[in-house]
Length: 149
View 1 (cartoon, rainbow, N blue to C red):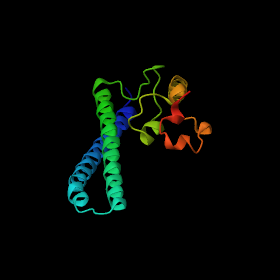
View 2 (tube, rainbow, N blue to C red):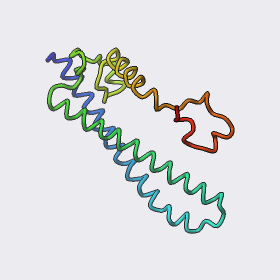
View 3 (cartoon, helix red, strand yellow):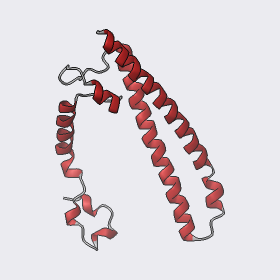
View 4 (cartoon, one colour):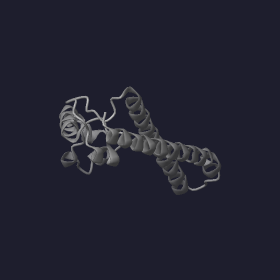
């Protein structure tokens, strides 16, 4: 491995550590905020206020879920650094360009392979995607209508 590449990987590892610490802090804060949901919802006497409280709790849970997913990706990237495979695309075995890793430190694939992967995944999931053009006013009342063939 080239000296510059070692410096780059060290820099990226530092970015990953900092982002992981930030995510852990965000997760703790969001969990603490959601734990007070009972206090907020317990005092709600209006259905609109209750819906708003539920929405806030759901958004908080979605944020925590997203943050946990990113934290897992960071842990996986750190594992690849330790194994010496970080920055190598598993599909084509070519190096992932440094600029891509700076922008997206948890990237697993080079840009061309990632595009192919996403297109392949899109094609495999095509039958389960929402077909917005099939929505009608009556189908809006049925939340599963847009996913039927």
